[in-house]
Figure 1 (spheres, rainbow, N blue to C red):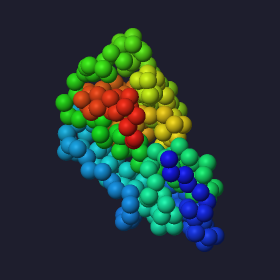
Figure 2 (tube, rainbow, N blue to C red):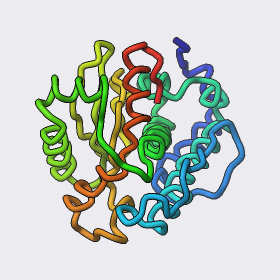
Figure 3 (spheres, rainbow, N blue to C red):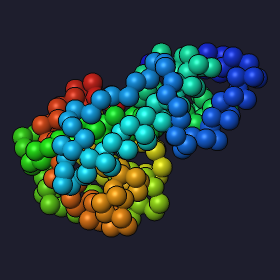
Length: 242
């Protein structure tokens, strides 16, 4: 594992002051910035998840919100190049090593980058249902697919304010549900994410307004179960990253 240190990450008081300013603006839209962090393209058209998620929401969510997290991280990397040379999951699981002046900004923006990179990947236009090893794990750990959806949707609906709801998977393949605030991710606690849903209002407000439970229910229609099967196999093999 690559470790981060204050010496490697930072280059003097001036750089620290600059990162503090970025930290305070962590949720603002940032201009495009070239650097090691890249905005992954959507694996489907922006209207590919309609009617469950509309094209305009997808465009704003991907291009503007995720794009801002990427741009902010590239600005951080100008001062701290080691950020762009270290695996994302390693940084997120070792945030204590990021000094105070940059820690909040990295937590928010790198967490947002990790969460959204996963989010686009585990959705698709055809929906479907779990099968194979994933279905066996769901039945074993939740009792049924319907029970998983009930517990997951409940956790997402109860998440106060902005945040995410995740299905986590450990090295033995056991599944769990976890809701976290803001752009926090189970990666920060050494866990791996099988799937997750964004319950920030920007993920659903154009279509669903304040009806988060309706969004959570509809979202299952766009879950890409073959991709989640791949993620589950990778988790058990110890190769799943984001």
